Length: 160
Image (cartoon, rainbow, N blue to C red; front, top):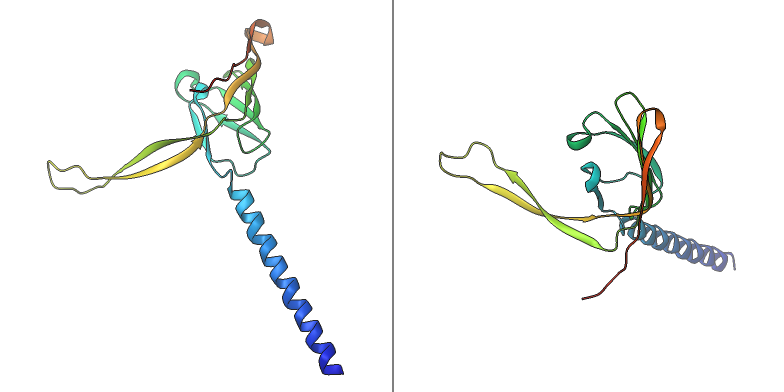
C-alpha cells in the first residue's frame, strides 16, 4: 500500500518536472522569437535591445553628432517614442515609430588580419533585423524648446 503511494508521488513529480521543462522551453522560444536587432536609420543606430520595454539613451554620431537620443521602447518589434536633445540638452525633435512590418537581412563582413600581400579574406554572416517605421506626429523644435514645425507621417500599405 505504501509502495503504491510512493510510486504515485514519483509519477506526479515526473509529470510536474516535464510540465515545468516544457513551459521553460516554450517561454525561451517565445522570448527569442523577436530577438532581432533594431535599425533606426534616421539616427544611424543599430542595436539589440536587452529588454522589450525599456528606456535607452544614445549619444549619436554622424548627422546628429553629440546629440542625445532618448528612446522609449514599447516592444521588441521596434514601436517607440523618442526625444532628441542637442548638446546643450535642449529638445530638438520628438516623434514615434511603429512596429517593423517584417524582418530584413543584411551582410556583416569581417576582415581576417595577417593575410599575405594582395589577398583579402573576409568572413561573412547574415544579420536579420527589424526596421521600425516613422509614425504619427513628428515635432521639430528651435532653441529653448520652441515648436518650429510638425508633420504627421502615415502609410498606405500595398502588396506587390
